[in-house]
Length: 361
Image (cartoon, rainbow, N blue to C red; front, side, top):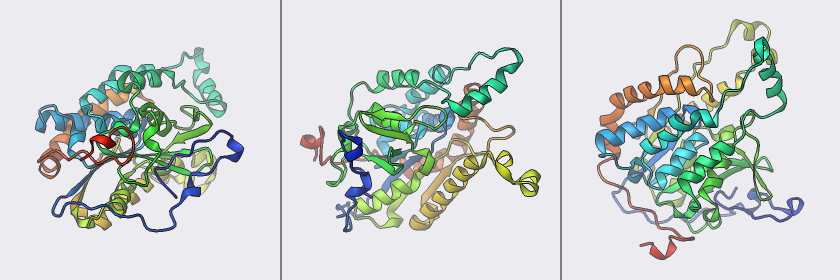
C-alpha cells in the first residue's frame, strides 16, 4: 500500500483506493548522517486517557527541558487517535503541558455526561448506544481549530505518521512530506488529520472530508510504534540498531479469561474482546520493534490501571487518577529518557513538498 498518498475524489463510485498507488519497487532510502541516532516517539490511542502520556511528557519538559516542547527532540513522531492529537501538537511546537490542558480543561465538554431519566438511565444509554454514536464531535473540532487554526499538515517541523482508515475499509497513514513519495497529505489541514485519526467507532460518527470518509486509526494500529519504525527504516539509510524509540501508552487494562468465557463463550461473555485484542496487538507491536532495533533501544512507558477499567470517556477518573500516575512514571523513567533522548534537539526534517520546501536545507 502506498502510505502517505491522499487520493482526491469527485465521484465516490469512480474513486481510487489508496492501495491502488502501491509502489512496485523498494522505496529509495534517503541518506542519514553517519553516527547520528534516529529518535522516534510513539503515542498510543486511548480517548481521554491521553491524559497519561501528555502528563508524562509534560513532566519531562518541566524537569529536563525548561518547559520546552518535548517534540523538538525527536526525528519522527507517530500517534494514533488521542495519541495522534498529541503528536500533531508536539510536531508543531506545542509543549505537552499545553496539550494536557485540552484534556483537563475541556474533557467534559468533549465527553459530556448525559442526563438520565430516573432509574432508566443505564438501560436507555445501553439501548441508545446500540444504534447511535455517543457524542457530537463539534466540541472537539472547536478546540482543535482553536489550537491549530488553518495550519496545514505539511507545516509540521517533525516527521509525522498518523494512522486512520478510510471509506474503503483500508488502512491509511497520513505522512508529512519527508520523502519524495509523500506528495499529497501535506495539503490536509491539521484539524482534518486529527479528526480522521480520532473518529472512534460508537463514540463519534465517521469523519467525512469532502467525499472521503475516515474512522479511528486505533481500530488497526492503536499502538503505532511499528508504523513509525517501518517508515524510518524504509525512508532513510539507517541501521536498525541506531534507532531509539520512546513508546507511551494510555494505561493498560488487565484482561483475564473468566470462568464464564471458559464455560459458556458467546458475545455476552466476550463483549470486551476488542479491548483485549487492542492490548495484545500493542504488546506484539512493542515486541516486534524491540526485536528489530534491540530491546535495549526501546523504552516503553505504561502502567496497569488497577480496579474497575477506566473508560475511554471517563473524564473524572482520568483526571483524578492518571495525572498522579503520570508523575510517578516520570519519576521512574525520567533520567533514562533524558539521557537517551534529550541531549540535543533534533533537526527539522527536509520537506520535499508543500510550504516548507523552499526553506529546507
